[in-house]
Amino acid sequence: AQFFQDLLHQLGDTLDDGDLSRVAEHVFTWQAQAYAGAGNWRYPEGPFTPLRKPLAAAKVALLTSSGHFVAGDDPEPFGIQNMIQTEAIARIDDFLKEEPVLSVIPRDTPATQLRVRHGGYDIRSAQADPNVAFPLAHLRAFAQEGRIGELAANAYSFVGACAQTPLLKRTGPKWVERLQAEAIDAVVLVPV
Image 1 (spheres, rainbow, N blue to C red):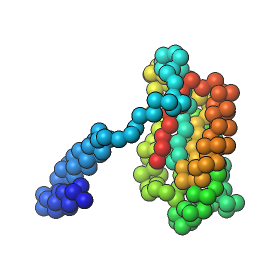
Image 2: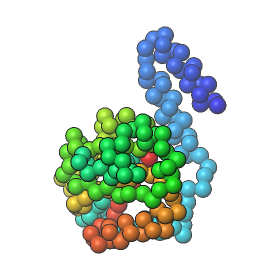
Image 3: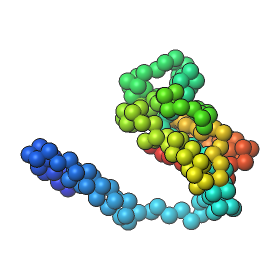
């Protein structure tokens, strides 16, 4: 409540002088507070393992829950061809009951060939710049700069608003096997 009250004050001042920087600073400050606050973000018994080699020698893959796919390779949720975003939003409850479908996106796919559809978040920023939720261009640049050893041949995306039990028990483990078969050393996970 305090965040929104202060935000309204900041917006009022911005209307007076046109300076948007105070709004951005306000949002940044509160976001930092949220991440720095007390929480149960530690999972010592989790499946995380340290890298066995330096990142500059590692083969890295990208996996997002952003709902990206390549033009012409639509995952066709519920068998619907060319589902539009407004329908995805209207059917969010249906998505939440379905097992996720993994979209395979070759690493050299140009941004102009990427599409995104997801009923669980506002996709406008991801449409304007796919790297907001699908940072493939940044990973390609890291590989060229030698920050990572190699970018995997494919990146992957799915609609994260999905049935969680099948994701954890069936789909996710299959995806892990796929990544292991590709000799992936590390995966950049981008949840939305």
